[in-house]
Image: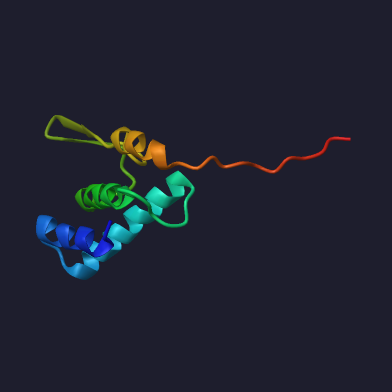
Length: 104
């Protein structure tokens, strides 16, 4: 999947500059790669990075909040990668093995 197409989609969908879209997408891609324990994206992973970029854009100004109340309306924020995206990324995950220690 072409990253520049995902970035251009963010530009047109969110009405932001290419630099802003690139920053959001790069951060989303880093989250996806960290979650999947991979070094480079495969398959449709760029789509999920774009979804995370949109979420990050929408959360702009509310960083660090888990919930807020305004005018009697409560808004809760999901922390980390949303469950829907985690389920979709599960097929791309690589098992992370720890070191084995010899006990003598």
